[in-house]
Length: 181
Image 1 (cartoon, helix red, strand yellow):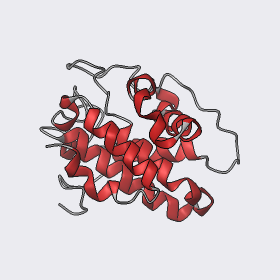
Image 2 (cartoon, helix red, strand yellow):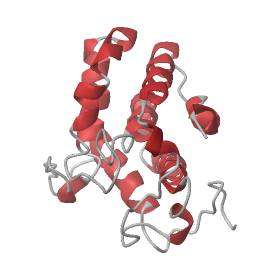
Image 3 (cartoon, one colour):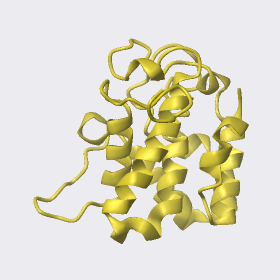
């Protein structure tokens, strides 16, 4: 399994530079990303995200959830490519640069790991994607979000919600990321 398994999700990124950036990062992702379960303990993700390729299935589900959330939050549509890019990359370094168990600081690792690809999208766009990845764990991550009461949902909150919803045990997407399996 490799980057081709995320081809459908990659095709959702309309900006060619952003898509090329994500493709380059996925080619450089640690090999374990393509085969490990979404949760090394099995406690934090549903059964369909466990086993061989579970982390990739979780990634596909998070993108799908984000697209549904965008329907409810159209003011974030202009950031769609950045949202999809961040979700495709958010857990690529979940076990760090080695293999084993989840590294708590994994939201912080992609910024340095993928830095060589900055030139593909430019510094400003790179920083935006990395900010979304840093915040993908919400209140459980190393970067705590500032969520104001009654504020409009922010892009980083949408990325966090998509990841969070796709990791819930009640989420019933099947192994291929399709509903009802």
